[in-house]
Image (tube, rainbow, N blue to C red; front, side, top):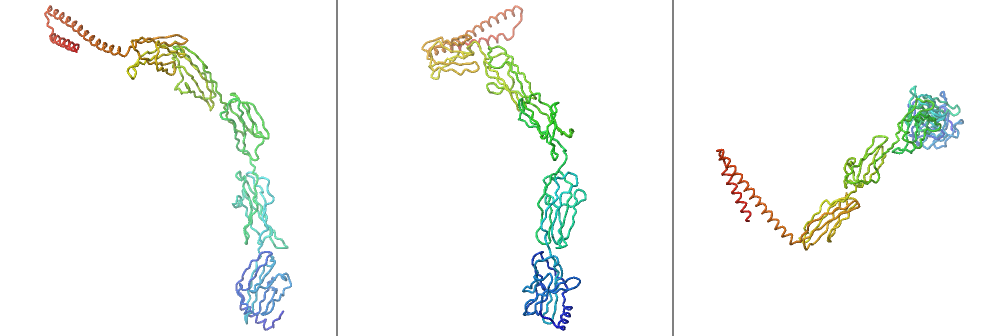
Length: 559
C-alpha cells in the first residue's frame, strides 16, 4: 500500500471540503445477495483518476477504510473487519458488496483524486429482505354466528423492513371496525440478524353467508411481487331458524303408494333428531331427518307435522291428500232391452275432491249423460263414462243392445237408368239383424250395412208382365211382409196415359156437377125474391160468370 505525504493529505482535505457532494444517493441491496454501490452514479472517467478510495461510516463519524486503487496499480484491500472477503472494485470504480446483510445499512463513500481535485461521493445503503412466506396458523375449528372468535394468526418471518400484513375475505380486504372485525399486529426483531417477524391475529364475528368463504392474508414487499397465504375456510355454526317439511310421493298419490316425509332445518350443524306428528301419533326419529309412510289409504289424508326434539316449537306442517275414485254405474256391462222400453241409468260417484265426468258412445264424445225414456234401435251401442280427479281416472261401461220385431218401414220402386230395369227397395228396422227375402229373383243384389237396427235391401228386375212382388223380413222375434205392384215397361206407358185422361175427365165432371148445383140454387133464390117482392142485385152478373166458367171447362175437356 502506498502512503501519501502530509502536503498531499492537506490538499486532499481541502479539496474534499470544497468538492464534497451536496446530495446523498441511496442504493438498495437485497439480503444475502451481491449488489453494486456506484461511484458518482458511475460517471467517473478512469483515465483522469489518480486515486480511487472506498470507505464506510462505522458510526459516530468514525470512518473505516475498505480499499484503494492508484493509477496503474492493483487494488489494495485495507479493511480487516466484516467486509474482508466481501468487497471488490468494479471496472467502473463501483464497489461490489456480496452476502448483503442488515449491518450493511450505512453510508459508503467513494473518494476520487483526479489531477489536483479531490471529490467524495457518499452513498446510503438500504438492505431489503422479503418475508420467507405467509401462513395462517392457530386456525379456529369453527366460527359461530354473532360471536367474535379468533379466526387465526398470520406470520411473515424474517423480513426487512417489517412486513405489513392485510387480511382478506374472498380476495377483498378486511378493516378492523371494533365490532365484528378485530386485527392485532406485532413485530419481533431477531437480535442476531436484525430481521423482523410480523404477527397479525384476526378475530372475526361470522355471518351465515360466510359459509364457504375463503380467508387469506397477504403482504406487499417494497421489492418483488405480492405474497399471499393459502386460503382457509371455516365451518360456520348457527342455530336453526327455519324448518321445512318436504313430501316425496308419486303423482297422483293414490291408495297403496308410499309417502316420505323429510324435515329440513337450516341450522349448522343440522339437527339430528326430529319428531313426526302422524295424525295423532308421535314418532321420534334420531340420526335421520325422514320418515316413510307405507301403503297409504284414503284415511291417510290430513295434516302432517315435524319439529325439533330439543325445540318442539320449531316445526312445519303440510297437508297430504290421497286421491281416490269409486264409481257405480247401474246398469252396466252387457244389457239387452226391447225397443220402446225405458232404461233408467244411474251413476254414483265417491271421490277425494272435485271431479269431472265425460261420456262417449262408440268412442264418440257425448255432450251430456244419455237418457233413455223410450229406447230405439239407434240407442244400441257401447256407452262409456270416465271420472277424473287429481290426475286419477276411472271408467265404467254399458253395452246396450235394443231388440224387437222387424218392421218394413218403406217398400218402393224406381226406374233404372236404362229405362227398362226396375229397382225395388225394401227398408226395414229390427234387431237382431232381420233376414230380407223377395218373392221373385232379381239381379244386382245390394244390402246396406246393419247400423242402429236399420237395413236397406235392393234388387233389380226386368218385368215382362205386370207383377205383384213381396218383401219379407224376419228375425227371432217375428216376421213382417209388404207387397208392391210392378208392371212391364209397355204397361207402364199405357197406365200413365190412362191416368192422365182419367184425371182430366174427373176434373170436368166435378166442374159440371158444381155448376148445375149452383144454377138450381140461384133459381130457388130468385123465386123466393119474387115472393117477397125483393130484388137481388147482381144475380144476372153471377149467372153470366158461371156460364162463362162452364164454357171454359168444356173447351178444356175437348182439348
